[in-house]
Each structure stands twice: as C-alpha cells, then as structure tokens.
Length: 225
Ligand SMILES: N[C@@H](CCC(=O)N[C@@H](CS)C(=O)NCC(=O)O)C(=O)O
Image (cartoon, rainbow, N blue to C red; front, side, top):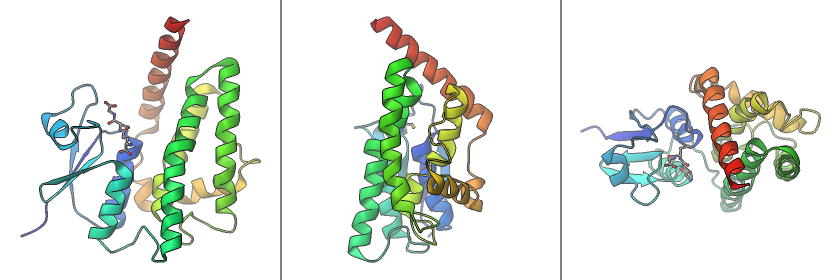
C-alpha cells in the first residue's frame, strides 16, 4: 500500500512553502489541503492544537507541525536529495542558521516592513545587521548548502521572494545589492531552481496581501497612540 502524505498549507504561507519545496525536491507525492487563516478547518486545529498554524504535514495519519521540524522529519523519512549534511558539526551549523533566520532575521525584517519613520529606520538597521551575518556565511559559496540546495537555503528561501515584495510596498531597499552582493546573487540562484521557481505564489497577489497586512498593522499602531 502506498504511503499517505498530506500537506495543510495556505496559498501564501512562506513557512508552508518550505515543505512544498522539500517534498518536491525529494520527489515525494503528496496531497495539498488549502486552508484559510480566517476559517481554519477542524482537521487543522485537531492536527496542530497548540499553534493552530500551517504548515502541518500528515504522514500515514500522524501529524507533524512547525516547518523546521517538518523539514527534519522529511529528511529522515525520505533520504533522497538530503537537506542536512552528514557531518555532525555541519548539521548543527545548518540548524543554527535556520534558527537564526526564524528568530532574528525574519522578525527584524518584519519590523522594518511594518513600522514607519524613526522606528522603521531603527528596525532597518537591526535587519541589516542580521543580514550581514548571512552575507558573511555565504562567502565563497553558491548556496548556503554549498553546491546543492540544503536546509538553510529552504529555511531562508522566503527572503528570495518577500524582500522584493516588501521593498516594492514600502519603497525602501531592505537588502541593497551593493551591501549584500553574496545574498543578492544567492537569491537569484535560489529563485531560479526549477522546483523553487514553479512554486512561488503569484507576485501581484502577494503584494496585495502584504500591503493589506501592513495597513492593518499600521492602523492598530495608530489606535495605540
Ligand atoms: N513557526 C511556525 C510558523 C507558522 C506560521 O506562522 N504560519 C502562519 C501562516 S504564514 C499561520 O498559520 N497563521 C495562522 C494564525 O496565526 O492563526 C512554522 O515554522 O511553521
């Protein structure tokens, strides 16, 4: 009997895209269940009762939540096109950079995107400090994984799409090429990998969605003042 692989995602979730990319790279067949954040299905809430978020991967009836956890699970189950290196230190470092991306880079870029004026300037300088660490890490490498796409490329893949979407909306450069030449080159190499390229959500829908999110955020901030 074949195995059952289901992915609960939304059309736009950058976290869920990680799993789409990993499953496609590994050639794993799966069923997609599209969720709407404003009307989550009972199944999603049952499968991820703590966070109630996408992505959730259900493998032969067993749910796994949290995208970085799912990536590691997928890498253990489907060994083809490995995402983590073999060497324990390199594995640990890949986990370190993936965690740094979620805990530092992502929140700082989000702040730079959702703030205005002086607060935005401050957030932007923190975001750039964080991006500098990634720029250093990429020196001498085509991808974070070296020659092949790896866990860190997938974990940071959202940068290759969202940075330019955010830049278009706020009219500011978050990752200027002259400051981040390696990251800039990486974004292009990564975004052009066929499996990655074919999975990007439509750009105009992303711009509209994030523009609306920013406006909601700004009006909440204005109510606080
Ligand atoms: N740390 C989680 C984050 C997942 C996440 O934030 N998912 C968002 C969509 S991008 C979501 O499901 N939001 C629904 C909500 O917050 O109610 C992961 O890595 O999977």
